[in-house]
Each structure stands twice: as structure tokens, then as C-alpha cells.
Image 1 (spheres, rainbow, N blue to C red):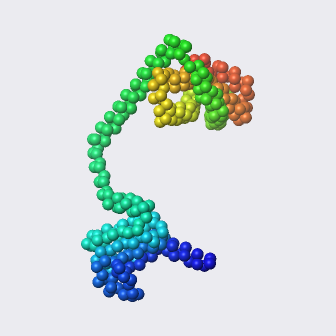
Image 2 (cartoon, helix red, strand yellow):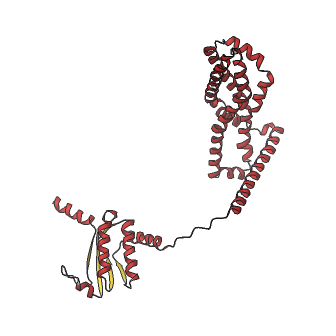
Image 3 (spheres, helix red, strand yellow):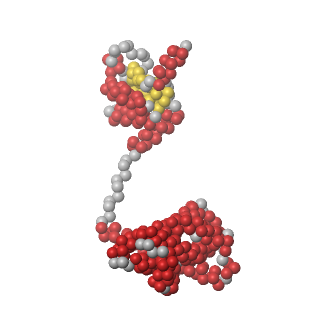
Length: 342
């Protein structure tokens, strides 16, 4: 019993073609009856899938060679048909029709017929020629025009933000303090670990690199000048700005972009709430508050890293380092670095 079932399933999976004159069976080895017949019946059986494509292709070539009249493809016993089999059948039908044969499909299941139509459409659809490439002058003009559009959009955004911010400052009750506190937490407090780590390592590296040069001249004490001025005036605000731009800026862009796609911004305009006042101003004010504080924190972390390296490599104690730092770095230098942050 199992052998019969296995044999039957194997026959259903195997793709075959049976070619015979329409209306009467063909004797084994008799090809003259097919060539002389006015109508030929081609029985498609089994699974016409990619695994059987080579065998099917050879059998279909024999069909084209033997055909001398009209052909009837009987697909009643067709058990499976994928894109490869449908493409091969469509190509065979087109080849026969081009040679003047009338081809008829019988017994094709609806799902197979739909697949055959899709394949036929894709095969018969002419390839659209690629548009001509613009010349150099056209490309330069397009780039200039698109750049002008982007610049104008940026200026419009800056102007709109400035106007809304001015109105918010004139009417403090319109400022959304809860949103500002939330953005302070995400852009400021949660950025403390990465800002502190990078600033600490930067101070450590600057002190380590400068130690070798200062030791040659016996100017170990000036390590405080090197670390203090470089960190407080330039590197701390720069590192802080880069980290916040990469971390918080990408988060803001993703949030606003998602709201734009889901039409939440249009919904805000519909209910009379300005998107700039709700989404931009709280983030802007939070960054104005958070960036100077993060810069001061980065200053402390960078100086601490420089102090550790100066103590271990140049034998400059923390007390001596801090005493020299107060003489080397003025208040204006510190405020200059903090002012660069926003």
C-alpha cells in the first residue's frame, strides 16, 4: 500500500509531456502520425517547477519540431506550476504561434492561468529605454537649483523658529516646561557617561603626548597650561557638540520624521497647535541649557584625566597642577569655551 502511495506521489511530482494526435492515441515510436495530424494534443502532467526545467525544455523542443498543425495543450493533470515552468510554457506557446500554429490551452487551473498571464505580461512588456544622461552644464544647474531650494528651506525654518521663540519668551506661559525637562533628561543627563568618558580620555591622551616633549626641556609644570587651555577653550565644547549632534540630533530627526510619516504633524496643525512651538522650541531651549553644563562637565573630566597622567608620568601632584592651572587659564578662557557650546 505504501509503495503505491509513494509511486503515485512520485508520478505527481515528475513533469512529463505526452504528445499524440488529437482524437486518437499514438502508437509507441510512431512519429509520422503526429506529423501528418492536423491537430496535436500535448498532455502536461506532473509538477512544472524549476527542478524539472531541463527535462521539460527538451520535451518542448521536440513538440515544436513535431508540430505540423494546431496544438492543444491539455493541462488537466498539471499538479504544480512555478514561475520557471510558466515562463517555459509561455515561451513555447509564443514560438509555436510565431511559426503559424494555433495553440489552445485546456484544463488550466485558475491560479496557474493567473501566473501564466503575469509571466506573459512581463515577457511581452517592452523594455523602457533609459532616459538620456544630461550634460555637464545641466547637472551643474540642477545641483545649484537643489542647493538653493535647501538653503531657502533652512532659512525659512530658522526664521520661523526665531519668531516662535520670540513670542514664547514674551509670553512665558506658552513655554512647555515639562517637555523641556524631558529633553533635558534625554539630551543632557543621559549624555553624561559618554561625554565624561571621551573627555577624560582626551585629557589623558593630551597629557601623555605632551609629557615627552616637556620632559626634554624640564618644563613639567607647563603640562597644566597644555591640558587646561586645550580642553577648556577648544576640545571640551567641540567634543560635547559632536556627541550631542550625533546622539540627540539623530534621535530628534527620527522622532520628527516618524511623526511626519504618520501625519501627526498635520494633525497638530488641524487642532491649532503649531509644530514648531510643540516640537522645536522645547528641544532648542533644552539644548541651550544642557550644552554649557555638559561642557563644564567635560572640562572637569578632561582636566582630571590630564592630572592623572601628569602625576604618573611627570610627578606633578594634583595640588601643583591645580595651582598652575589657575595661573595659566583665565576666567575669560573658561567662559569662551562655555560660550562656544550652544
